[in-house]
Amino acid sequence: MRASVFLLTFVLAGAGCGRDSSSSSSAPAPPEPPAAAPVASTWCGEGWRTLDETTCLAVPQHFASPPSLVIFAHGIVAHGERPTADQATLLAAADKLGFAVLLGRGRQGLCDWDAKVASDYCWPVRRETVDRDGAAIVAGWADAQTRAAKMAGVTFGRRYLLGFSNGGYFAAYVLLEGLMPLDGVAVVGAGRTAVDESRMAAAHPPLYLAVGEEEASSTRQDAENLAQVLTRRTWPVSLVVHPQRGHELHEDDLVAAWAAWGR
Image (cartoon, rainbow, N blue to C red; front, side, top):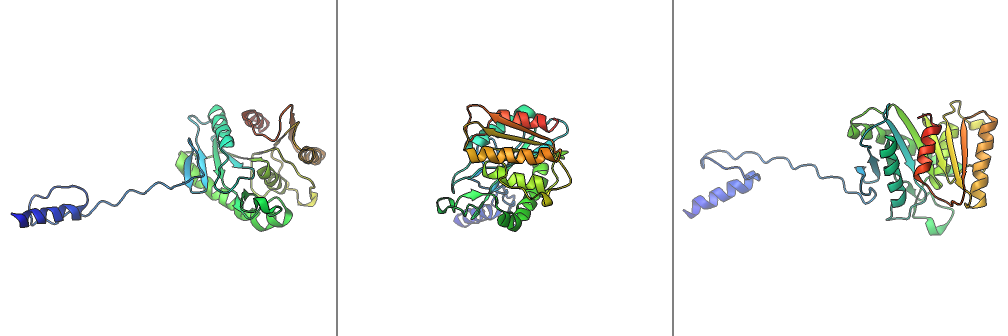
C-alpha cells in the first residue's frame, strides 16, 4: 500500500500539472511549458504597458484615424526614478486625442556636463554625442515602434516626436537633420542655441514649439532662435509662450501640437 502511494505521488509530481493517471503502467503526460513571465519594469508606471525594461507603451481606448504613435523623449531623470507627472499627462492626452505613446528611457553618461547628473538618464544634446549616439537611439525607437504596433494590434499611419527639456533639445536635432522620418514634432521647454543650417533636412514636418514665460531666459532664447531659423526657411512652426508658466509640460501642449500637426 505504501509503495502504491509513493508511486502515485511521484507520477503527479513529475507531470507537474495535477493530471490523474488511470493506471500505474501509463506514461505520465509531459509537463506544460511555463507561461512567459511578464517583463519586470520599474520604468513603466500605472496605465502603461511594458515592451521591455526600459520602454513603455500607452494605448488609447479608441484610436483616431489613421492610428498614430507619439514618441516621447523625456527630460533629465534621476537614476531609479521615472517621469511620473509627464506619464500622467501623456496618458490623459493619449485617451483624449486617440494616439499611442512610446516612452523610452534615455541613457546614462550623456549628462556629462555636470557630475551631479552624470548617472541620470539623458539624451544626446551636443554635436559629438548626437553624432556618436543619435543613430542608435533612433534605430531603437524604430524597433520599438514595430513591437508597439504588434502589441496594440494596429498599423501606425503617422509617427510624431515630442521632446521635453533635455529630450526637446535632442528632438530638435532629430527634426532639423532628418534623423528619422516623422509627420510632426513638438519641442517643449527647449530649442536650439545654434543651428548648422548646412545639415538641415529637405523634409519639413510641422513643429509645435513651446516655452513658459517664467522659464530660464536661456531656454526662451533657444526657442526663439529655433523659431527664427525655421521661419526664415519657411518651415511650418508654431511658437507658444505660456504666460505664468515655468519649465513644465501640460496636456494643452499635446492638444496644441496635435492641431499643429494637422490632426
